[in-house]
Amino acid sequence: MFPKTIEWRDERIFLLDQRRLPEEEVYLECADAAAVAEAIRTLAIRGAPAIGIAAAMGIALGALRIDKRDFPSFFHELLSICDTLRQTRPTAVNLRWALQKMKGVCEAHKGMDVGVIKERLVQEALAILEEDIETNKMIGKAGKDLIQDGDTILTHCNAGALATGGYGTALGVVRRAWEEKKGIKVIATETRPLLQGARLTAWELKKEGIPVTLITDHMAGYLMQRGEIDLVIVGADRIARNGDVANKIGTYTLAILAREHSIPFYVAAPLSTFDQTIAMGEEIPIEERGEEEVIAFGGERIVPEGISIRNPAFDITPHRYVSAIVTEKGVIRPPLEEGLRRIWGEGYEG
Ligand code: MRU
Image (cartoon, rainbow, N blue to C red; front, side, top):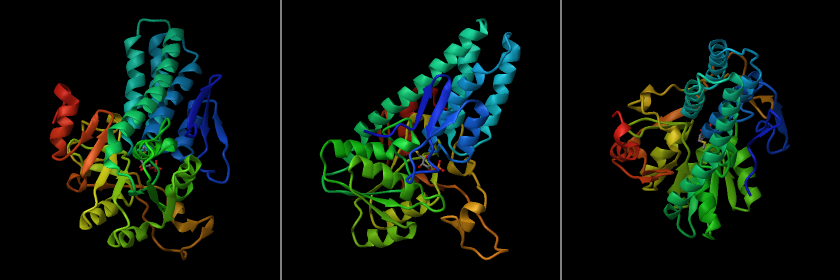
C-alpha cells in the first residue's frame, strides 16, 4: 500500500509532512488556507499533482471560514485566498489548474446559497483527490509495458505516491510493473538540494519492497556508460504544447545523458500537468528558491561566506529528448505535438 499524502478530516487538512521524512512520519494539521499555503511554499507537501490537491482543499477550507453570506463578498474573499495559494509555487501548473476548477464551481453555483457553494467546494476538492489516484493508476496501466522483466529503471526526484494523491505518476508505472511481478530494480538519484530522491523516493519504494539503490545526481552518466540503466522515467511539473517538459532540476541533464547512451527517456504525467496556453518550454516560469537550500547540507554550512548562489528548482527538457509521455489516456510518442493534439481533441489551440 502507498502512504496517504493528504487527507480531509473534520474540516481540517492533514498532510504527511515531507520535510520530516524519512526520520519521522508525522501529519501536519492545517486549519486554514494560510496554513496550507505555507505548507506548499515550504514543501511540507510537494510534487505537482499533490500541490494541486492541497490547493483545492485549501480553497475549500478557506471558503468554510468566510463569514460573508452574499455571493459577491464571498467570491471576493475566495479570490483573495486563490491569489495567496497561486503565489506559493510558480512552475507546477496543476496548482493553477486546481484553482481554476474551484473557481469554476463557485461561478457555476452563483445564484445559490453560500452555504451550498461551500459544500460543493468541499465535494470538488475531495473529488480532485480521488480522481488523481484513479488517474495515476491509469497512467501505471498505460505505461507498464515500457518496463520489461529484469529492467533497471532510473528515476529523479520523487514522482510517487508522495507527489500525488496516491500511487504516483513515474513511480505509478514502476509500481504497476512491480505488481505484475516483473523483476525490476530502481536507481534513485538523491536530487540535490532538497534530496527528494534520497529522502522520499527511497523511503516510498523501500516501504513497498521494490529494490532501490541510491546514487548522487552526477553518478548517473557512469552507470549509463556501463550499461547499468535500461530506461529513465520521471514526472513533470508542466508540459508545453510542443511536448517540452519542466521537471526537477537535473532532469535535462539526465535526458541528454540518456540520448547519448541510447536509453529511452520517458515522462509520466496526468493531463492536468499539460499547459495548453504555453507553446514551448522557454515560456514556463521556473521557480528560483532561497540560497539557504544550497548553502547548507544536513543543517551544516558547506559554502564559504560571500559566495553567490543560484537555486533554480526546475529545468526544461526539450521535447526532442523525450521518447514518450505516459498519460491516463495512453502513451504519446513523437511527434509529441501531434499526439498531444489528438489527446486534447477539438479543444486544442496549437
Ligand atoms: O520541488 P518539488 O519536490 O515539488 O518537485 C517535484 C518534481 O519535480 C516532480 O518530479 C514533479 O512534480 C512530478 S510529481 C508527480
